Amino acid sequence: MHRSKHLIAGLALAVGFAAPVGAEPPRRVVSINLCTDHMALLLADPEQIVSLSNLASDTHSSVMAEEAAAYPMNHGLAEEVFLQKPDLVLAGQYTARATTSLLQRLDIPVAVFAPAYSLDDVRANLRAMGEALGQGPRAEAMIARFDADLAALRADPTPMETRPRAALYYANGYSSGKDTLAGQILEASGFRNATAEAGLTSGGFLPLEVLILENPDLIVRGARYPGASRSEEILAHPALRQLGGEVSREILADRDWICGTPHVLTVIAALRAARHELEAGK
Image 1 (spheres, rainbow, N blue to C red):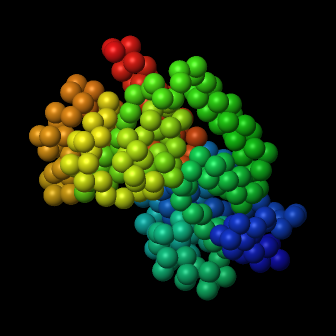
Image 2 (cartoon, helix red, strand yellow; image 1 turned 120 degrees about the vertical axis):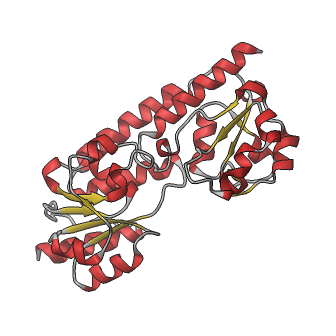
């Protein structure tokens, strides 16, 4: 009954239902997704975690690499996860689908989490993770701290129409509008989103020419990695380097907001500081 209860709980999380009342907390948890790694590290008891995905300890990808280094790593393969005898597997909606499908057919409980597309999703995923791990009170306390810290960062008497404009710009000319987690992070820091003003509401391609015409006060660029990827060439375009003068710069690492966790508050604080610097220079 213990295993079947958690199978129901895992499947329920994927479609947004509550876990069964009285289900025992899992004792052997394996995470195969970077964002579920982070949430497990934030909410689980250390002894609950059997292993995390190999990305969890990658300093380029993981904001919690130091904490993750204390645990064994896995590569998201069904065979290795099965041999670790988990009573709960944490997975992302779009990662390792073959693994999650096979594990479910083997009657191993799998909780599947969708990516966070908004700040509300950060709260919802933390609450669902707390439920899955049997750490509901800990999750609610973390959500309360998140909301209090977010409210403090948002508190600002400056009218929105007078605030500087920023644009998010990544490899292949990808950008984020207001209906994305990154866009909401930008808004929470007090910037106006130049991408949204250009007509891009969600995530998608923004032509460099359009970005130049929008002439934002700040460009938040994706980090460039070794390997000379052609997709990143646009980030070194001369026009982009000139746009916005000295305030056109990389101010954040991608790992800071790749996952929707309370770590996004660090991003909001950094962007808020950049905004105050711009406003002071006017």
